Image (cartoon, rainbow, N blue to C red; front, top):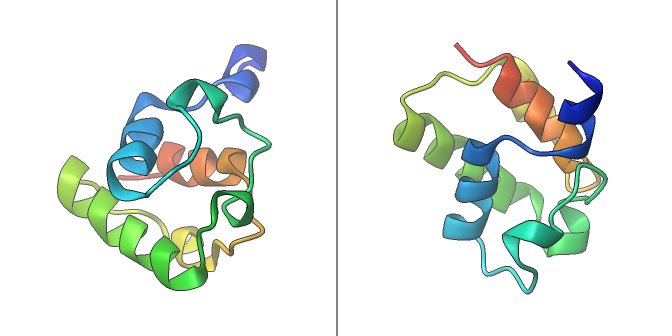
Length: 85
């Protein structure tokens, strides 16, 4: 991953978050260090996001997607997206 990639999030991830979560922040305020917990996302919501991502983008997320917890950062989720097949 390039240095620039550490500062930005994949467009697919940002779109998924803004479309499926009742966020109180704008897409521009989402950073790699933002945690799901700080966005009010619990473990059930995370699993729903995984399913939504697979359906919306026609991808199969790796097993690590199931290990994401509310304390995970958006950078952690971006790595999971990067590993998607």
